[in-house]
Length: 127
Image (cartoon, rainbow, N blue to C red):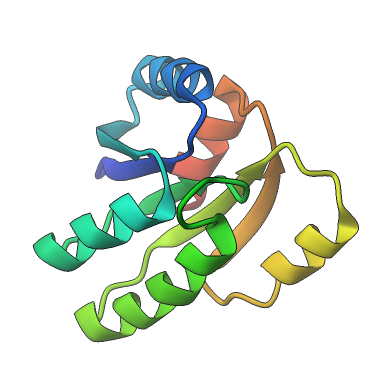
């Protein structure tokens, strides 16, 4: 099985640390990159023209939140001509957020934090 590259975009350092450790445990991903907000990620993706296979995206972040990131990211995918699978990973329980996530073609699923080992393995298998 070809290993996927995964990206975590989240401003919570503890969540990122725990999630990275879980990703390493699965041994299903070849590389993990991380950003503190959507703006950092967009700048990096534009500079490298290289998108990861899977993104775990938080909604509530400083500078550029998850929704603003998705607006920019969808345009970027078209320009680079590569698609990534986005999973929104949020502690939000608002139904509006879950409905809004469905409006984005690149968003596969809305996940509740924290993400466990089982979920990371399912994500790897689905993509």
